[in-house]
Length: 333
Ligand code: GLU
Image 1: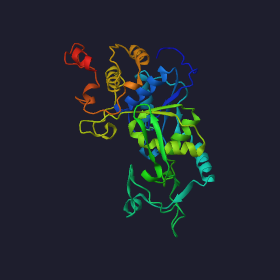
Image 2: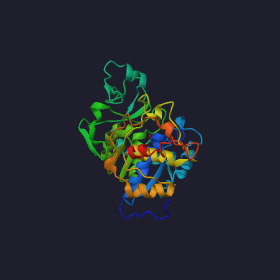
Image 3: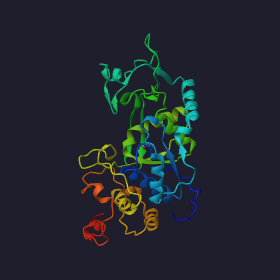
Image 4: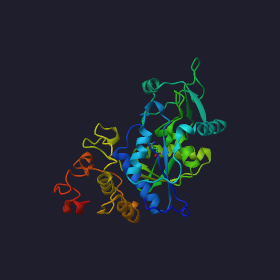
């Protein structure tokens, strides 16, 4: 991007960790912009990790497409891309360590059984696991998944954007899955193992993962791993208030025309507007001007018109309707 080698002197190591379940959409771009700008503004290293553990959900070619799009947007990662599918031994080793600590147990329950159990209480992410197999599998049951024995004490953390957050994992989520019934390692385990292995000091990602953070901190503590500093950027919602990545309107970003989407991301991140006319310019200003304290905790009503309408350059450079040419709009952004 700037042609300058990043300095590692600051000790900052950030990362972007997309799952290859489709092309890069605008919500992910927002997280990537924040993560990259924060890393570079700290003179830090920025890493790319492809979280391709969930093979059934993976879309063929998406990992390559995401990398191509990121490059087209001017992102540069400083070390070879890490693929989680190549790290299964490390996740097994972490599981073995937790098992040796007596923190893992086999569970024979299916999702439907958990949901159907009268005792199952609604938690922060669906029904709280009622602990059916915690003290041993009921007779005749075989272990399907492996779960972590969670503790009741609250796990709080200070988020650089969202402020203080946290909950008791046992009381709000319950004993959660570390290895799924289909044999795949769970995201919560893999992310903790990899963040530590890659020496990640700062996690900047979407607020959809805010509720995962106490689980990850719990795992870090159990495994004796350091906890990175967190910042969760607001989710981009579509016009119906649905999370963009879940909506039909999830607009893949266009690598052939990166500036409009970058400017919109910059605006939604609450940053001072800039009139960059090239990618190089955009990132130069972005890195110099990045202020994480300006990032709003939530985005509400700030997406009119919807992001899809603003992700492309106007058909003609002289188009007076372009939000990027309209000075009043520019003042607002
Ligand atoms: N792979 C996750 C996702 O695409 C992000 C994981 C993380 O940043 O911790 O939603």
